[in-house]
Length: 426
Image 1 (cartoon, rainbow, N blue to C red):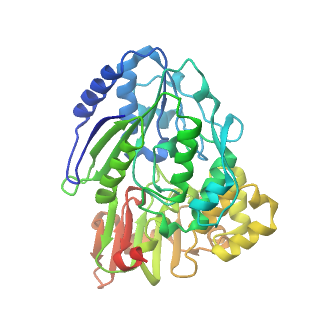
Image 2 (tube, rainbow, N blue to C red):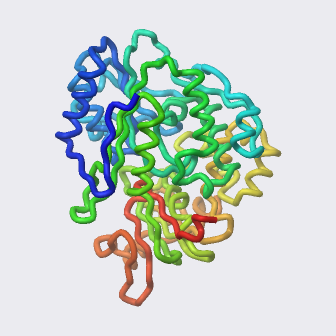
Image 3 (cartoon, helix red, strand yellow):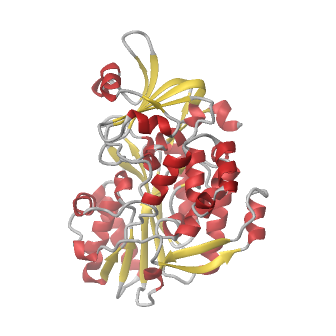
């Protein structure tokens, strides 16, 4: 059932309005005795899911007993991050999702179905895994809170992804990522219906349809006038319709079609949000369809300190590197460590330019030139690049430097998807 749907490309739903809307929806569904909230983690700080979770806590009070950030494969949130993102929500309500140990397999999507939707590229069964806390029958409401935005693995983020990946298990996460990588990232990004989404929808409707999940989805964008993030849309429901409507608005809002191919792209990774290439490679994923052949992607990453946020994944990235699809698929066929971590294989494919453009990573002091080059990237001196491209003089989009060089600047790659029309249509 769709409880609320409102949004437009130039809309701005204020925090006060969101609070009132949530109250009206919660009044409509009736009193609840025990509520679990599943918001995103700190890597989705701009989603407004933190304040939404705080509003939910204000409404339900002691009935909202548990808050489990949808970490997926990310590192647990620190107390400081929890305070910054979730405000007054008591820290004792927070639970850490352990994607390797605290999960239950609730069913398996048949291999025949996976093969059908992936056009034969993958033919294994897909395990639908969720954190065991979700199966506690004392919960009479599960709030899945998050932002719908273009995504490299599934096309558009959120909805069932928040459940099966955000609080899912290692096998399910790994295999879902590999389905997307095998099918082709550029055929997936910005699309609501994709093979990965179809697999997750099969699992949602067949295996967890009896769970009392209510999806609270935002669509967010940076306002051209104020430069601040605003909420363009809010969609609340317990079925697929709320996601479809949010996806359509996100496509209109977060999909940036450039008027010509980008030859030099400069992307900044905010130190609070991006400390690994596992997350920072959104700079690669989200811009690749806008980059010309032989373009250069310059990634300014002052807080970069690791490749993977998980020790195992970090080791695999260091071992195999971002060296393109053929190299990664061959390494996966020949090596058990990658076969056991297909999400890492998918990430290595996603993070490679496939030799089509140059990726220059410019890290701060916690990552060395040797480390950057060992995984297949070019190294750039951060201080030198910041002198050449001073952030306080750049605006999002096209910029012409004093020497006449044209660059395209992106202040946060997590907020959109960039493409050149001819390449996107391919």
